[in-house]
Length: 131
Image (cartoon, rainbow, N blue to C red; front, side):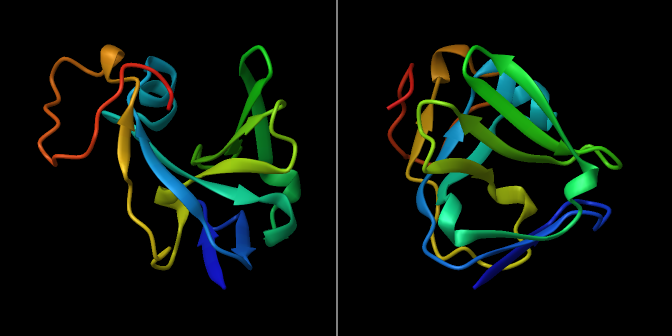
């Protein structure tokens, strides 16, 4: 089991299953949502996800057609990237994990719109679009 929470602790969750494919996304929306050079996400199946506390503290924003991002209404922590076209899973922000997820990012996506002040130096594959 892997536990996670937002910055203020109002939202806490558990994952009972493996995380899949961690990515570093450099699109402008992820940069703005995270206030950083990129957002790091991993795929989680809904059946493996349990919200322990904080349902009323979760806000959501439709950032583009068919995509909803969730966040803690108290502290602003980005939590999930939910795509309507993938109803069985969502992308979880790895920065909210309280424990080692057992995986590491394997790719950089949307590097065509990465922050000009950030240099990717880790040797992972880079793609201009989603892969």
